[in-house]
Image (cartoon, rainbow, N blue to C red; front, side, top):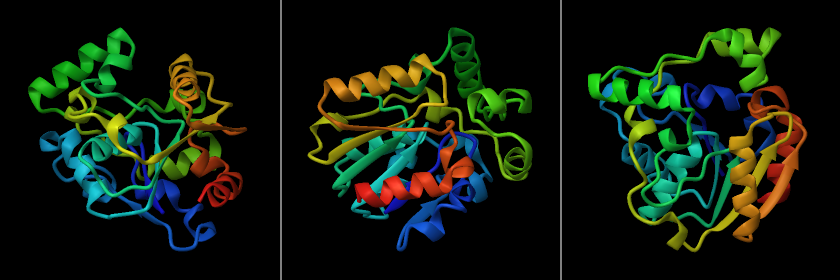
Length: 219
C-alpha cells in the first residue's frame, strides 16, 4: 500500500498510520516534504510519475493527492485499487484550481506565471480546514512546506476514468466542505465504494487508529 499526502504536506503526515499498516510506504511527492528544494519547476505529471514508479497495488491519496493519483491512472500506472481519502478526483482536462474558490484561482495562476510556490495556509484556518489543533498543529507546523504552483493549475492529461482500477472514496465527515461533498456524490453516482469516517480532513494525523482500521479492511 502506497500512502500519498495532500498539498503542503509530506510523507511525515502518515507517521502514526504507518506502524498500523504492515508493508505500507509513504512518499514525498516532488517539491514537497523532504523534497521541497525547488517546487517552482514541479508539474502534476511529475507527481503522477512519483506514484507510478512505486508500482503499488493499492494507492491511498489524501486531498490534493487525488489529483496526482488520477494523473498516474491516466498514464496507465499499474494500480489495482485507488483509494481517495477526502480527496479531489479530477477528470480528464480538469485542474485543481477549477474547484477552488475564485479568489484562490487568481493566486494560483499568478504564482504559476511567476514561478512562485503557493504559501502554506495561515495557522488560524487549520482547525476549520484540516482539523489540526494543539499538539497536532504544533507537529504540522514543523513540517508543512509551500506547494508547487503548477500542481494546482495543471489539468489532468489523459483519461483516468479509462483505467480499470477499483475505486473507493472515504469522506471525512467532520470536514464541513461542499467541495468534498461533491466528490463523494460523484463517487456514488459512478458506482465507487464509499465510506464515511468520523474524522476531520487530516484524519491520518488526528485519527490514525480509525483510519488504519478502515484501510486494513479495504485492502
